Length: 332
Ligand SMILES: Nc1ncnc2c1ncn2[C@@H]1O[C@H](COP(=O)(O)OP(=O)(O)OP(=O)(O)O)[C@@H](O)[C@H]1O
Ligand SMILES: O=P(O)(O)OC[C@H]1O[C@](O)(CO)[C@@H](O)[C@@H]1O
Image (cartoon, rainbow, N blue to C red; front, top):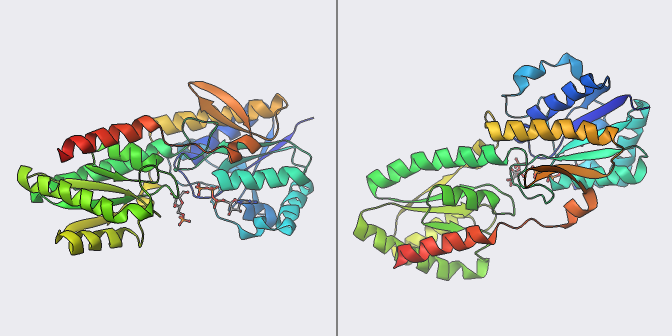
């Protein structure tokens, strides 16, 4: 009989991880299950750092960013010894099911646990990057996009007032979901992301931007470049330097960084996290195992972890085309 459910948050924290934890705790209470939290991602399993979730004031957690269970990237999970140790801790506490909230790396870790532990494992998509298939949106993505959009709107005011060129670097690791959603929302004149740029195109991209900047001078407007992190050869500073060297153009650089991961989650994220948190407990009680619970076209769905991990989630080609049309129009 199902008695004890464990939960942990892993990888980069994402806004509304707390909302998911809260929904899991409330659902456990409703179904008379005990809920144990493990701290610091997989480190908490390996080092046996746990807490009875009743000890938390989970209601105020709903509006708090970060994660009350803490998060971490855990090197030891990349070794078989670490995975075995994590499984031993689950056995030691008689855990009947494990829920992990995190990104694709965290779900890979969960799949490893499944190889050595006989009980059900369920993943929830918790990352700002939105790079997980099996769900239209990940928990935290909407908040990150909102935060970055508001930040860039403010930057735009100064850019307009000073008729300046701004480069704004956004997160996303190796995917452009944040870059495109934020770039389109802010009307960025240029979006440079994995989906429309490869490093060998650096020189032609600089020439294209310089053409846009020429127009910007004539129209007395601003020129905003949204740049995905980990993409431009030499980084965002190198793009700024190239604009200066090739076009004698001065630009301002703003790296938004971790501001995108923090803050109070927007309602869309709180509600997604709540719905998926509740569904994760129902999935366990329905006998589901080795799946991630996500939401596709308005419906909560379970997708095999294997498929989530091995299926890329590209940025919609409509976004890429929409931006290209806007840029082409601007450069005319
Ligand atoms: N192949 C793997 N095998 C076992 N564990 C893994 C594997 N990949 C990642 N993990 C575990 O998951 C943790 C988190 O992974 P990662 O750093 O890739 O973040 P993530 O879950 O993708 O989240 P985010 O998208 O927010 O960065 C790792 O530190 C490690 O403990
Ligand atoms: O906070 P860290 O460990 O430097 O990780 C940063 C990475 O984490 C994320 O915020 C989430 O995966 C990425 O967008 C970013 O590349």
